[in-house]
Length: 204
Length: 88
Image (cartoon, rainbow over all chains, first blue to last red; front, side, top):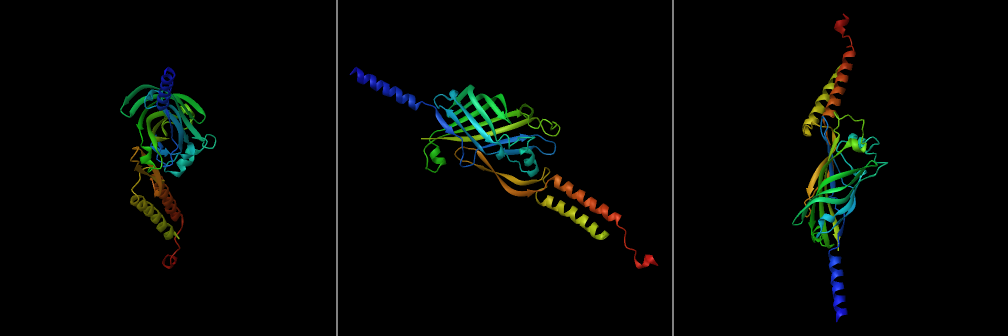
C-alpha cells in the first residue's frame, strides 16, 4: 500500500512538473507577419524601413513568466527601405555589411521588473545584442502576450498549440555597433528606433 | 535646333512636375515601393509588405529641373540661322 502511494505521488509530481515545464516558442513565421521596424531621423525625410526575416526561439513558462529567455535572429538581407539607392547603401559594407554579417541577434538572458496581468507580462529583458559583429549588453522593455490554444485559430485548425506575442520598442546607437561611423549626425541620426512585433508558436 | 532644345527643356520640367503632382507630391526621397499594412487578427500584429510603386520625390524633381536647365542653357549657345531678311 505504501509503495502504491509513493508511486502515485511520484507520478503526480512528475506530471505536474511536465505540465509546468516552460514552453518553447518558435518564431519562424510562415505567414510573414513578424517584423521589426527601424527609423533613423534625417533632414529631408526620416529613414523608415522594416525587416521580416525573423527566426529564433523563446522559452516561456505561463506559470513563471519571469523565467523567460530566448534568442531572436533577424536576417540583415531582409531589411528593406522604399528608396532603392538607400537600400543599396543600407546593405553595403559601410552600413549593415549584409555579405559579412548576415544576421543580427538579440539574446535575452533574464527578465527584471516583471509585471503580469492576465495573459500579458511586461518586463525588462536583460541580454545582449549583436549587430555587425559587435556585441553589447542591453536592457529592452518587452511586452509578452500568451495566447493559449490560439495556434489552431491561426493555422486554420491544422495545428494545435499556443502563441506568444512579443513586442518591444527601444533605441540603439549607430555608433555603438560601428554602423557607418563616418555619416555625420546632421545627415543621419545616431539613434536607431526599433519596434519589434513578433509571434511565436508552441505546437502540441 | 534651338527651338527643339527649348521645347524639350519645358517638356522635361512640366512632365516631371506633373508626374510628381499626380503621384502624390511626395516631399521625401523617390520610392520604388510602398509599404502596405495588414492586421493579423489573432496576434494583433500589423504585417508589413511592400508593393511596387513609383513615387517620385524631391530628388527626382530636382534632377529633372536641373536637366531642363541644362537643356535651356544649351539652347542659348546655339545661334539662330540667319533668315533671308537679316542677310539683306
